[in-house]
Image 1 (cartoon, one colour):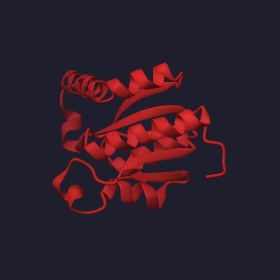
Image 2 (tube, rainbow, N blue to C red):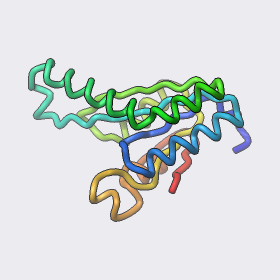
Image 3 (cartoon, one colour):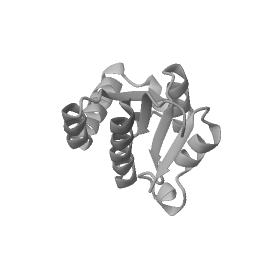
Image 4 (tube, rainbow, N blue to C red):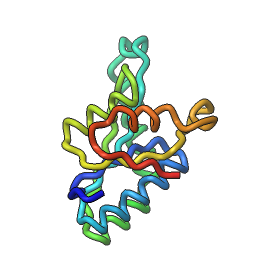
Length: 146
């Protein structure tokens, strides 16, 4: 990677590979004086979109709180290293892959760091479908962490 890496996006789902990806993103950020955004995608099936907004907001708040707990040590280490570390949780009714790629493009991300497998049983059986989709469709560089 010879290009300047100023913005790193790390996809987080709470799995060990995603937490490892966050630590790897932090090391890259330290070397490049980059900022990091940890992104959690909450998939909301279309059928649930018609539920009360209060229910969806409560679920979103719960996601953010859980995400913050998963990343507390990384947040502290980034703070100690003067690395800007943001946490984002967004909802999608489409695909997680599309949400990650759209976020990266809208925010001019230079590098996406993602774990090789996610939390679902299907994703643990092979290279995660989300990781594979991001690798195959992202316009920026992607690092898959084992």
